Image (cartoon, rainbow, N blue to C red; front, side):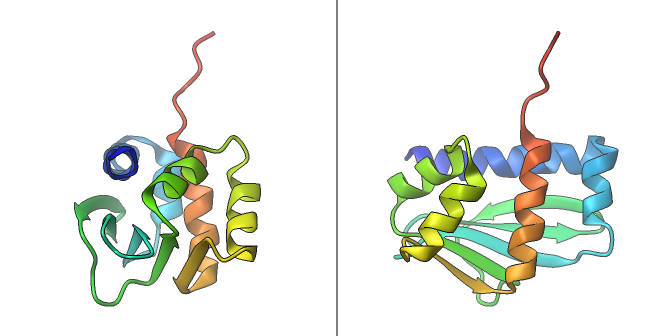
Length: 124
């Protein structure tokens, strides 16, 4: 349940950033694609649509995403996406096959770059 909620929240945050954050919008320039995050068994999945410099998301999978990141299970997916060092968590997951990537790996790196814009702003 936490993983499903986290994917939903990421969709909201990316949709808001695509409307209001110029640096985030710059990352969406020239991108029209669909990607998804899911569990390996596909029971928990959300796909994200990047179109016209906006991001929206919907529950479930799509037949042919530009890339998909599949986590061994929902608990592991939640833990990985919440890790303080996401880069390291992803690399370890890919090495020990608890994370599988389908599609274009360059776009996965692009997506990881997007996530840095989703952190809440720190107030001084």
